[in-house]
Amino acid sequence: MGIGLTEFLSIELATEHPQVIPISVFIVILCLCLVIGHLLEENRWVNESITAIAVGAVSGTVILLISKGKSSHILVFDEELFFIYLLPPIIFNAGFQVKKKKFFHNFLTIMSFGVIGVFISTTIISFGTWWLFPKLGFKGLTARDYLAIGTIFSSTDTVCTLQILHQDETPLLYSLVFGEGVVNDATSVVLFNAVQKIHFESINGLTALRVFGNFLYLFSTSTLLGIGVGLVTSFVLKTLYFGRHSTTRELAIMVLMAYLSYMLAELFSLSGILTVFFCGVLMSHYASYNVTESSRITSRHVFAMLSFISETFIFLYVGTDALDFTKWKTSSLSVGGTLEVSGVITTLVLLGRAAFVFPLSVLTNLMNRNTQRSESLTFKHQVIICWAGLMRGAVSIALAFKQFTYSGVTTDPLNAAMVTNTIVVVLFTTLVFGFLTKPLVNYLLPHDESSQNTGNSRCKQSAPGSPKEDATLPLLSFDESTSTNLSRAKDSLTLLIEQPVYTIHRYWRKFDDTYMRPVFGGPRPVNQPEC
Image (cartoon, rainbow, N blue to C red; front, top):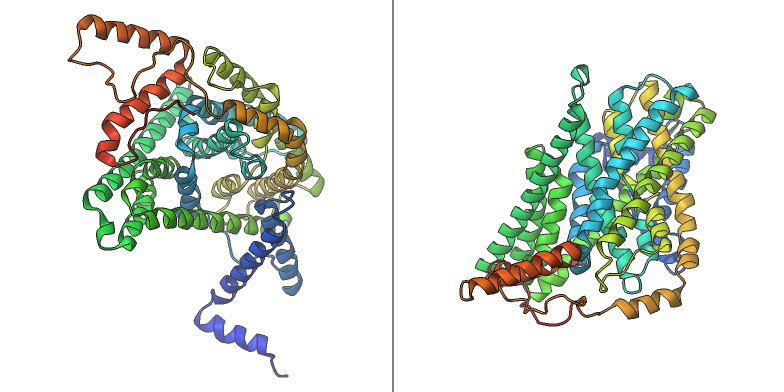
């Protein structure tokens, strides 16, 4: 019996290049996903992540039928592939594209949501699963597993909400949701790595302090490394000015240094996410002004393109992996048990999210109570921020695979059960909560209302009572009398106590304009009301 053309090509290609066929098929599906996403862009009901998951599920079904139920996979997931090749461009692009003025003006709020919020959410999810899983008959997980579950499901995916919110119409909400999403992912990964270093055989009352201390060490050193690489890159580009001879070289330096920052963090066992994010922020703030205009435009498009492809790749795999019958057969839970466990996790995610968003929003409003230039977070805003963090995505999948599989494969029934539950939670939150996001946002923030709020808050003068100083004035001056410096310091301290967020932001701008930009690059300061 002869063989067909398909079988012949498969034999020939598989002999010389075993990965050619699956990679080619995956690229074709990726292109198909981009085309479908483009066709669905206008209605804004279905975002890219939902489209990618749906296309992945359909592709997985087709492959499952072709393979006669043996596999739905085109490629085998490797968490190292995710953390080394797919995650860096996503996080770097987030830092590079962030609106820095809004991000740093709301920095304390973003950090409170993204750091304190993760600790609160992790605590609730970890203790909740530890208490409820055995009641459902799901036993056998270790203390490390429960803490890892808390960090895995504290990582959010805010892409759906960001695609519906308009940055020009709701700048405060967009800034908070975007900033918190990035900081949240970084904090979740750092906390996950800190959990892996706990010695549970010698656990005692100081263990929590050690975990917190390890977290602070990883968070601070990773941030400083990213800032350092970003400043070095900016200084080199400003000093050597590669654009005189080749715009390709300056663009290559930016790409390579960005990736180097991530790899250095991994080499020193730090958080590559935090490092590459702050490297992106610093490069956007300084380095992008030290290259030619063509390189500046090209770099933004290149980084956005790499990030987009990486995100689509991940969600495509999630869609195909949902039909991996091997994990479902290996799982210690039945279909009903999986739905019960995933329902508990989703409920705990809701409780953990609400437990910090509303209290921290009240605290933020109290900190900004004397600053008329800052918008307060209304209850509607708080609901949207809370909802935006309910979706789970790529980081949750990657951390689950890292904790419960080895190179995407597991033969342990408990581990297989946790992987399948993670996939169910990601699919449910992305599809169900994602579809409901647009009607919720439109109901809470009608278009006219959001536009009116933007018009009123787009550009306001400084808060009453705040000193109207030139942004280039030093904090203290040796050319002025002691009494003048003491009076200025007293006024600044009073302003810091009454309006901490605005004061820190204002003095950072003065320091940045006076000392940083002349050395590392950037636009010259212009004296105008802050917007």
